[in-house]
Amino acid sequence: MLKSTLVGLVALTVCSWARPVSAQLGDDGEPIDNSNYTVDASRGPITGSTRVVGLGGAYVAIAEGAEGTAKNPASVAVRLPYSRRTWDYATAVDFGFGGWLPETDYLNESNRAGDSDVRQDSLLFGSLAANVYYRLHGFGVAAEASRQALERENARAGLAPTSLTANYGVLHASVAHGFYDGQVVVGAGPRFTGWSLNGNNSGSDLISVAGVGSRVGTVVKPHGSPWRAGLVAKSAVNPRSEGGAREVSDGGDTVWRPESIRLPWEVDFGFAYQLGPRPLNTRFVSVESRAQEILRELERNVADTEQRLVRAQEAYAAQPTRENQRRVAELQAQLLSSQTLLEQAEQRAEVTLKQEYHGRPRSYFLISTELVIIGGSSNSVSVGSVVSGVVQRSRDSVALSPRLGVETEVLPERLKLRAGSYLEPSRSDFSNLRVHGTFGFDLKLFHWNVFGALDEFDGWSVSTAVDAAKNYLNTTFSLLFWH
Image (cartoon, rainbow, N blue to C red; front, side):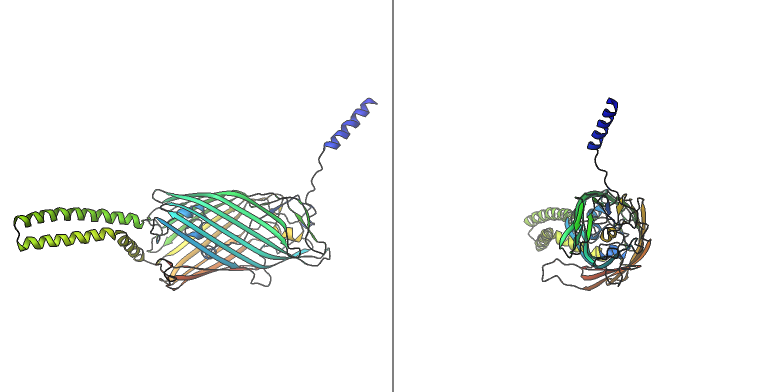
């Protein structure tokens, strides 16, 4: 009797202490009925600047300009060949629209499971970047954002369509330094990411999470060589959110808020090679350093002229002939001219460097390759799965995305063309491997210094890029300077 009583007490105690087991998601195609899951926030199609998109995303080895900040943190210390000042800056602003087709499948989920359907409309992209350079050091920030209108139709529940908006944003901050006179550049910094899902009917945030990860990158670009190599590693970002269901429409439709989102880890390898007479990797020379070289030469000339002038004056004092007088006047004029040139050394250096840059040949053919390795995402579902309310698990395996791009200047000082292709990996059993083709161009327009507000530059230009795949068409636009 005592033994039975003790067994009963122990069983009662264990039951009272035991925590309820969290409900697990069902099989693919079943409704999502709890919050014990993660959203796979990895994106398939490439977004960013017109040059990045036009090259099929193969930019980790090129890694230059403000458009490279989001691709490789080392790019913020890669000095461009037309950059001549110790302190300098670069900016980039790009806009994209991906809703041209009647049936857009940005999420690459045409093989959706279950009875729910997600209509994808009004896909908008935007990116903004700015770098500040100091000699071979650099700091930069780059922000990318996308906004997509989604419509959820649940045939099984017989509910009216629910309008939702998915927002995604990432902010990169980077610092970098060029070693060995800028031939090896290393950079690092955090990447902040956020994802939200809003109900258009209720006007509220259904899901809103944000987190931070890190990334490190490098570029190897030996002076005078026609190649570059790049490597970037990004840590996973896995912020958590509060759980629970959330009403999203007057019809009673609900969305189960996930426990977290996951942006998987990523490693990018890249290699670029440039054919033609135009150099790819040039040594950075600033106006200030070139001015110092000119100053040292002028100072030697001034010192030599002063000594010769003293001797000429002494000769004139001893023999005040017309010839000695003329010699003194000539040396005084030379000294005055040299002193004037000393004051204009920086202007001369600026002109010299501009002439050297514009004297370089324009013809080139750039080939850029890249392999992106994306980590898996366990116990997670796609964005479309959250919207539809139907389980569609992401693969817990590594995905590969090879990329290739080419670029050339077909009309010197007027038109650049670029094209590329990349493989969009399949992140679930209900999505497909998708091959993308890309194309872009830069067209020089005219010269205008904005009523003297800007320094002299080569000219304004318009840039655009197109990314096309099955059920996907994205166009990106930008207004920039031609160099």
